Length: 546
Image 1: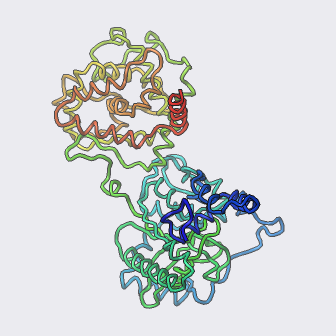
Image 2 (image 1 turned 120 degrees about the horizontal axis):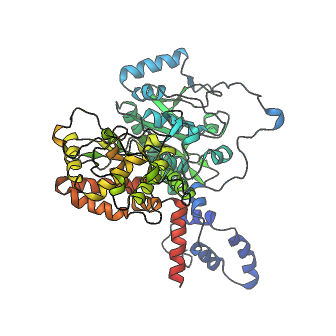
Image 3 (image 1 turned 90 degrees about the vertical axis):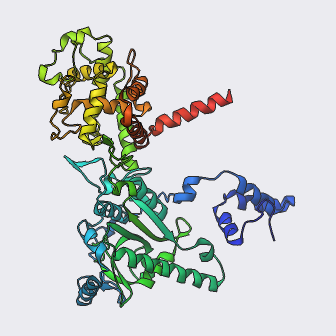
């Protein structure tokens, strides 16, 4: 029988809609009997009503700290004994399986993961620890500071749409892990049991679904375990099905032993269980078990390097003068938001010295300069702009900014700057840069390098980076997304977007198109901050209402 308003929806999907529909449906169904209204009318109304997309996708928050223990239970346990069907990695049988799998070439993943093997810091951090371990084994640059001078992934800096505090309290679902992995730069292929078949009452359909899932999992394990590329399988399963203590868990797969059809789980909860071999079919059954928080089965995820990252850069053109490195979406969003916050905080501050207070740049730093500051029109406005640009960079991940524009063809770069030497706005910004860099003490910005009358004698063996060539900082400023250029401007500031368009005309030739493509890439890497985007959407709604 087909209910009104639900035409074409299959039975299993309808059962899920009933579970996802609002609790008011059951309340209304009680009153409907007294009014003689059919339940189908109320159900159809509930299906059409808006639902909480975050709750449907990530699951409802528990509101309970899953890592908390009762006061008398703190420090009660020290490790657990594995069930008989599972073989500890360090046991004689475990070593024999490792040796045989190594000979068969199905332990390739182990070595990449072993370099980064770590124990989770919190009882609910199995997902975060697994992800940090895998991202580091894939050698994905997080493009954010870990500690000191180093960029690295750990459980605390994986935040994207949610942070470690939420995970500490609620744990991590299958979909949340997948989303977090993508935000932090990995390519993810997620596989879970077919929901329609798993939800069916037909035992035969369930068995077919199980067999299909096991076959898919075995094929993935065989392929990834034998791959010499940096890629990894992560399993999301419930410990209860394996006879272990605990519930939902994440860990990576380190290898496969063909003769026993078992996989090596590199368990990140090493305070509880060591790495161990598990029968593949048992692990598949543990993944098929439904997660009570989300109402969905668990599964496995294949993580590997994005194609663009494996190739080394975004938007790379053959023979292009510059390239933009791969930046994980979470890092780009964080950089954009921190940059915007810094500029908004000091928008109305007036700490820029006047031109009279600044020394004239020395000859060795005045490569693209031909005029003194006092002779340049709008010199102070240019100085304010460059000062805001460099001071923001100096305190907001300067080591990341210093990676965003890289030289790929030195001869092409020489030609680009030779053409820009006759573009007056670029020359004015370089003049302001030479003055402003003397006032920025928190980062060591380099001097200008190119002389307009001596381009032909430039040493092509010289390594050019943002930390050795001042002109590159001016060029990066002109390649910034327009929303960032607007943040940098104050009253009387030069029109950066028009400068950028004029720069493309000044460069001409084969280099204009690659530079425009790299500007577009930077716009994707550094999106509009979420708060500013939400404000813009609100204003748009008000405008439409008017």
